[in-house]
Amino acid sequence: MLTKRIIPSLLLKDGRLVKGTRFAAYRDAGNPATTARAHNAQGADELFLADVMASKLGKSPDLDAIRVVARECYMPLTVGGGISSIDVAYRIFECGADKICMTTTALDRPVLLTELSRLFGDQAVVLGVDVTGGPGQRQLFDHRIGRPIAGKDWIGWMREAVGRGAGEIRLMAVDREGARTGMDLDLLHEAMAAVEVPVVFEGGADSLDHLDGALTAGADALAIGAMLVFSDNNIMKVKRFLAGRSHAMRV
Image 1 (cartoon, rainbow, N blue to C red):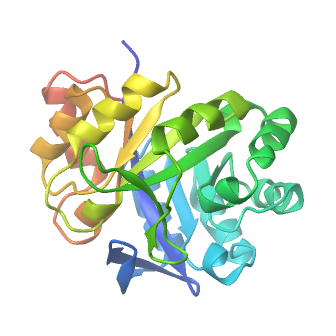
Image 2 (cartoon, helix red, strand yellow; image 1 turned 120 degrees about the horizontal axis):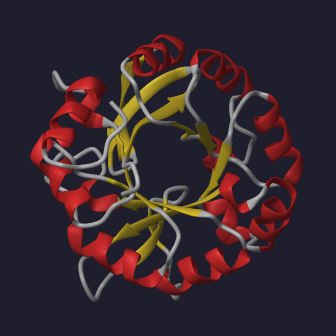
């Protein structure tokens, strides 16, 4: 049985961590270095760090902040936000990242997935897929403009991206991001039926039972944000609970 991963999801804005709801209304969520240090000490399996303003502003991510966070990580670090070229990707890896995650920049230039997977290996290239809407009405979401993307099938896009070299999917249920209303397991099932690469699922978790349900439904890993920031949960508590529910965890 493959070990399931628990991944703190950190959003970076102006040198600080933030947390919002549906990619808006951001609130301060702490210092990047001290937060990464705490998650590392508690046994996080990986860390996800996304610069939430980089793509919106058409700039590279905050390399200084990435470098500081990487120094605190003894687990794999995935970085997203503003990865629009091979040069930007190189600089992120030089800062200490182990993987890169592209969402809207991959939509802008799909061939970049192929170029990066050939250079760094598909294990280092993650596709971010932000999805809004319910069954039968799902659409890709562009956080830069704050609305769905018309005429682009999200399942077809995932399959194309995997064919181009994406080795993992980070699936975000946009309508539940930061809302803590429960996870959209139907969305997870649809994604897992469409691709054969690992799926990291995120959006809506508010309880340990929500996490248990998502792993039971087949998620390879869970990325958690608000549940860690605005509750008394921590990585050790989460992993011990899930191990007690018979999930294969590294504890």
